Image (spheres, helix red, strand yellow):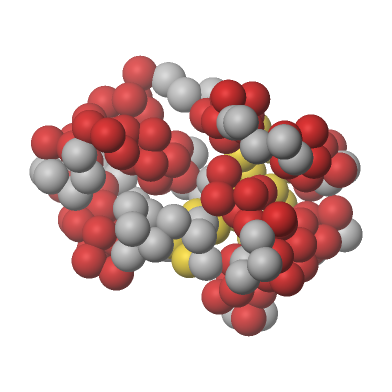
Length: 156
């Protein structure tokens, strides 16, 4: 069974960031080689389309991943409700609703791990604890949230 890794937009953008490029590209190589399953969402696609980055066409990195090794989910009412719970619990503010949606998608669709470079709102030890407390309170499983670097180092 392949490790199901939800990639948020920061991982795709990381392919063009000097600090995060090596690990972001290596994670995409794992997806392309079929060593891991890439999970993405309509939110990731929308964020890329709305981006002002002149490299935007290149950010469609996930299009290079064969169909057998990627799967996309769409936001639904359940995702939005869980993201709202994160805001109600003051894990994030309304300005960070999209970040809450990324975590909610990973939780509701039960991915193995969420990959992100967003240290302020997603890959943040205290916030991960709060996301998981909220998930359990509302009947969901805890979710693992890691950087691509950490995911690559683990032998899953």
